[in-house]
Image (cartoon, rainbow, N blue to C red; front, side, top):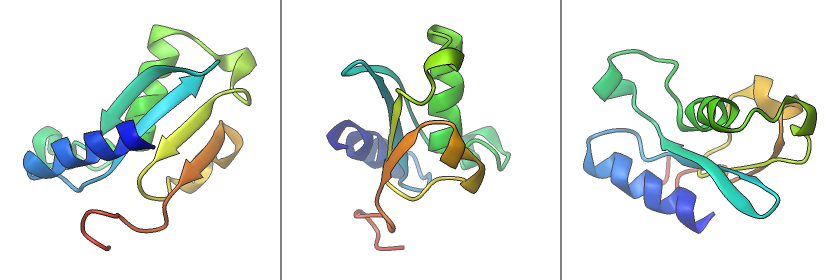
Length: 97
């Protein structure tokens, strides 16, 4: 979760919503991201979605997806609940929303 918080701070410094996410498989961070809605000019570039997309591109984990852990600083998009075990905060510890 510490790495996800670092990414959230980076996003906040860039004017984004302060949400960070990392994907861990076998105790190794295999992907990480922060929300990029403003910089990308579109809505579906949430930290959780980006981190999972990057993880799948770097190391396809389709057969091991339930072994992966998604750490995200704000509760993720609902459809991800079946994708990976999720550890999340319910509100941003950086901005309290």
